[in-house]
Length: 114
Ligand code: 5GP
Ligand code: ZN
Image (cartoon, rainbow, N blue to C red; front, side):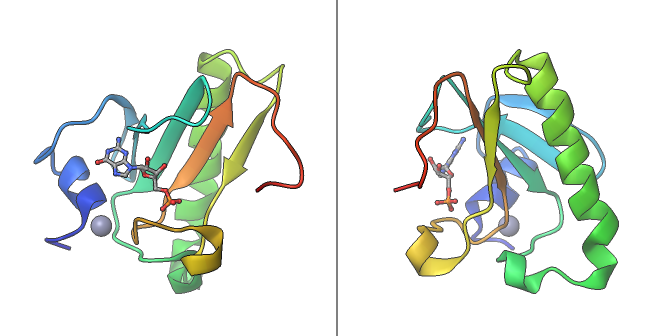
C-alpha cells in the first residue's frame, strides 16, 4: 500500500534499523522503544489487522513467531523473558494498520498491561 509507513520501510523508501529480513518478513527496531529491546516483525504482505489474516497466511504467521524466537535468542532476552504483542484496532492502541509483532524485553513487564 502506497501510503503505509511499514510498506515504505519494507521498500527502503524510509529508513529503519533493520535487524533481520528474508523473503517473507522484515524486522526492525521500534522508533519509540518501550523497553531496552523493542523490535517489530512485519510481514512483507500488507495485512491491515490480525482480523484480515486468512488460512493462506498460516505459514506466514508461524514464520513470524519463528523469527521472534530467533531474535529473542540473538538479543539475549530469551532466558530473562520477553513479551510478544499484536495490537488490533482502537482499544488496543493499534496505530499502524499493517500487522506487526512487537517483541519487548530487557526489563520486567507489568501484568495486566495498561
Ligand atoms: P501499534 O500501536 O500499531 O501496535 O504499534 C506501532 C508501533 O510502530 C509503535 O510502537 C511505533 O513507535 C512504531 N512506529 C511508528 N512509526 C514508525 C516508524 O516510522 N519507524 C519505526 N521504526 N517504528 C515506527
Ligand atoms: Zn503496509
